[in-house]
Length: 84
Image (cartoon, rainbow, N blue to C red):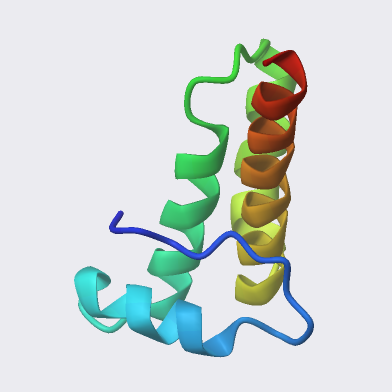
């Protein structure tokens, strides 16, 4: 996915979701799921972790997935900054 905003968000990230949906045929649900799966990509996951990631992709609404993905991205960035 192209340059997705990671927040912090002061309001629901509807504009970001709509912009990302363009690369998913206009489907905002697909864009949010892709954003979520992109955020967890590269994290070592056990079988139960994978079940929870898939559950979240199907059960959380678009904005929630988007914000959780942003939280993961910001946590990574913060961890890298602290390690330097």
